[in-house]
Length: 210
Length: 344
Image 1 (cartoon, helix red, strand yellow):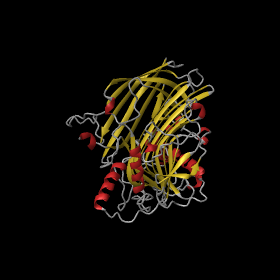
Image 2 (image 1 turned 135 degrees about the vertical axis):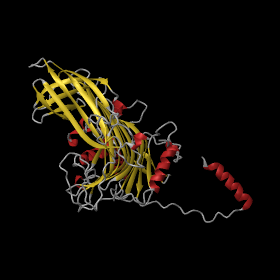
Image 3 (image 1 turned 120 degrees about the vertical axis):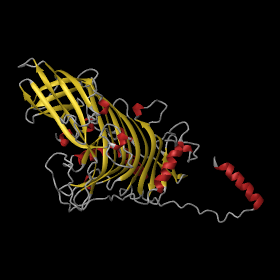
Image 4 (image 1 turned 90 degrees about the horizontal axis):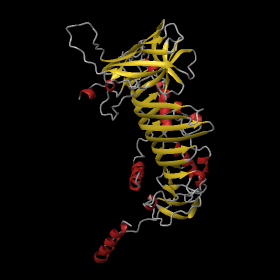
């Protein structure tokens, strides 16, 4: 910061001190709100009562990420992995596969497919995890930039994924730092891991349409 | 310097028109500093300024995200649908809501964040392992308990990045942070922790390095809502650059930093201690007209409201910076995934 700017900043700093600095008040809601837990993850049901405020997103986005990972050779011990990861996002619950042939075709802003190839991970796996693979994603189709999930792989990204039987999910080594975190629910049938993660969150579509 | 032409014009006018300039200005009466340990005050001021970094905002953010329950708050992919809010439109997660959980905990406003961490190499290899991490939060949100006590409120933006490399018997790191906002709440400022209470408004940039070279650069200011240094200083402003004695070039001063530290009393008197010049065109010349900069003796020149105080010498011991005073977050602190919370 240039000296003059700093002086100005200090002057502003002084000038702005008196009013509201310690005002930590906010539009807090009354604490007698009758709760309504829907019991389902992230369903946008108004959890407030009739006399309280509970904002609900104007638009929603359903993120669906699914695929299969086939371990080879069949029966093990496994030395390789191949598979696919598909990613689609639906705005306000509108899916392209409703079977309604009279409806307008739905053009998805995010419709991406990756090829996945992997080799056994030689580092330290998470507790109770097996098998653990170092995998590489290859973008096969679609434009990843149209997707909202900030954690999607880029083309040629390499991750370490592990199957956790106890929780029946694939865990991802976050940042390759030994931080194993939930990535996707799944199931193992023979030599094939099938996985699917789907959630609905809020999204701002107005900005994108402008 | 800039006032000279003005004064000449003024003098000329006075001679011709004999203007009545009224009573001479009252002499500035300085606050009584009796009993104030200025050395300790400046050391404490620098310490608290350096601690005003993104870690405070992020750690409280992570803690409050962990308090989320289905439907409260609502999570968003990317930017929440808020009007007239300056939220980045980049891939990220965010929450935005005004809602109450069954426990009575409330979420209001929004928080938007990005974070990334990548570790390469192996500590046991000759080249070691390198962690590169980044995180950023933009928020105008408040989380409060059922008792309406604010747990965390942040209005502003904070970002930081870390490069941490380590091998067998060695490590080096670079950490930089920019915090610009107002923050309160019992999570970031736990009254039981014995640190700062009540929160602050800060505009602080800090960059520090450690390992083979210990250096620090800091500039900005912090105003504490309740915290006080020496029971009278409510703000600190800094603009300095320094390095540990073994990290400096021979011509550089190991006894004191380049730049200055300012402390402000509650009645808005700034007490600035000016050390070695920060740059060739150092700001210590403006507004401080000290032609003779502080010699390299570990002491600074004291200015009160810009007026040099020749009868007070302040020689703060800032060597704590090189003895564990500079820290960095752990690489793993940059990891935050909400896939588990989102379910699915």
